Each structure stands twice: as C-alpha cells, then as structure tokens.
Image (cartoon, rainbow, N blue to C red; front, side):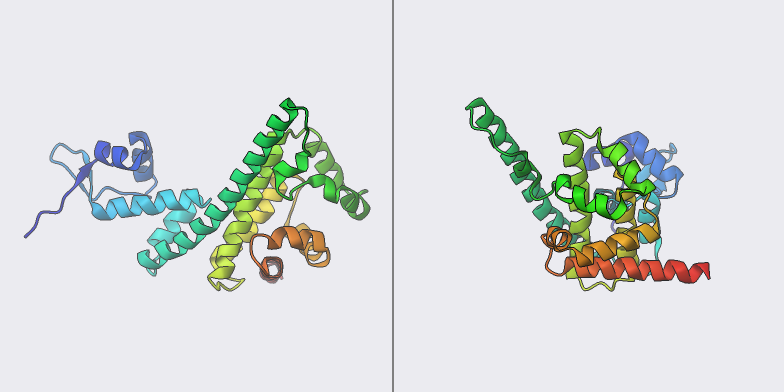
Length: 260
C-alpha cells in the first residue's frame, strides 16, 4: 500500500504563503484540521488538506468570511469540482473589473503627466463612470430632509480621491460577483446571491448611510427607474440591474415573511 504523503505546518505555510500562526488559528476554529500528528505531536497535513486550504484562500479572495467558508466546505453536498468552476467564473469577472481599474489608474497617471505638461484632464476620467457628483442633485431632491442624506453628506465630505477609488473598487467587485452569479443562471433566492445582496447593503451602510433592507428596497426602485444608475450597473453585465433588483426584493420578501 502506497504511503500517503504528509506535510508539516512549515511546509504548508511555505507552499500556501500563509503564516504558521494562521494555520494554528484555522485549526483552533475547526476550519483546517490537520490530517494527523507526528510521533512528536506535530501537526501533519495531507493533499486533501492542501485542497481545502486552497478553497479557504479562494473564498477569502472572493470576500467570504471564515465562518461562511467553513459552512460551505463542511456542507455534505459540497462538490469541489463544481465549486472550482463557479470560483473560476467569479475570478474571470473580477479580472474584467481589475482590467477596468488598471485603465482607471492609467487615466490617473495620464492626468498627472498632462498636468506636468500644462494640459489638465478632468478627474472624471480616473473614476471610469463613477462620479458621485452626477447624482448629488438627484439624491438631495429625493432625501434632502432625511437623516440618511445628512449622514451621507457628513461622511462623504471628508473622503479623499483614494477613498473614492476604494469605494469604486469595492462596488465593482460586488457588481462583478453578482454578474458572475447571473451568468451562472443562479436564481435570485440562491444562498450565494443572498450573500451578495447583503454585501451590497453592507457596503452602502459602511460608506454612505445606515442601510437596512427597507432602504435597500428604496435603492432598488431607484436603480430600476433611473437610467443613469441602470447604465452604471449594467456595465458589469447586460441585464444586471434587473437581476440585482429582483434579488434585493426576493431577500426583502423573505425577511418580511420571517417577521410575520
């Protein structure tokens, strides 16, 4: 019988570019349990452990929490091949987003170079269609007297260019992941799509104003009725606005049903 090759903590840390301390922590929380122990009591990992660690790293890159990753991997119906294919689709969508971000960086570099040559470019070029000023008047007309609007104005007044770029990158990533789910024909009530709707809500809550499910419903209606919002979202995938709106409403309906 062929011996199963095992790897020490240091071996795995070196191969996966993670710290030994991280591997110990994963063991403590039950996320990545060693396959065996050496006679001296040292942790040993096998090939299955390495594949599981790869899934952990991919999940983190896709924005999942460690608990979400653990639940997915421990699901009896977890299919590693199917998961890798789904993850590949998501990463391809992220690659497209990354390419757009690189183009925005190139625009920023060009602007800086133009300024040195005395030929200024507009800052809009570095945001690739994301300019909060485009919606300022609209937002004020809708919510000017609301607490949310005042909170948003207070927060965003202090944001610098790098923070706006961080916001755009985060939103691009979310929309890219939603586009990947749509391309994979995942129903709007799928658990993965529900997680994406929550990420969308949490991003707005973190950067702009308190955003519960009811506020997100209001945003969905705005996305649906305002061509400017729809055009910005649909850049990530044709029909994405309609898909996202349906997903938001599906989650809201489920939330309200549990409250009854």
